Image (cartoon, rainbow, N blue to C red; front, side, top):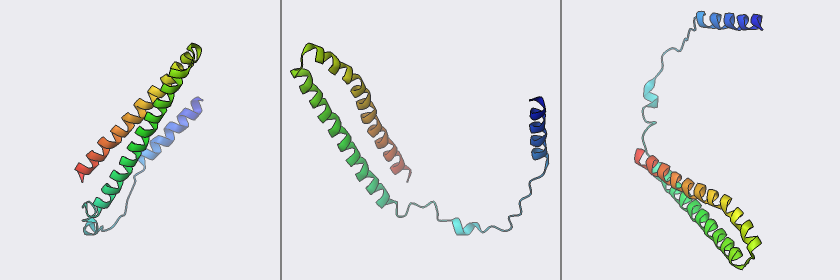
Length: 117
């Protein structure tokens, strides 16, 4: 083990001591002058906004439908079944927080990206 550690240390010293030469030549930076302009990004932002809106609507709709189903089950069940339904509510609440929070975070990121451009 000690020999292996010493050999790794020697290899790292050689890598640090050996000079790294780069022969790049002349680079024309004028060819890359327009790459940071925001031309043509409006289509991307509008498509991203549409996709984000669709994801939000689907997520909220699924959450509300599932909540209605659990509510109807809870109202029509016996006392023993109510306990199992309450156990099912814990993952539902965690999932709802993640889903609503996730879409909210996506909206914040989208607005931040839109303001950056």
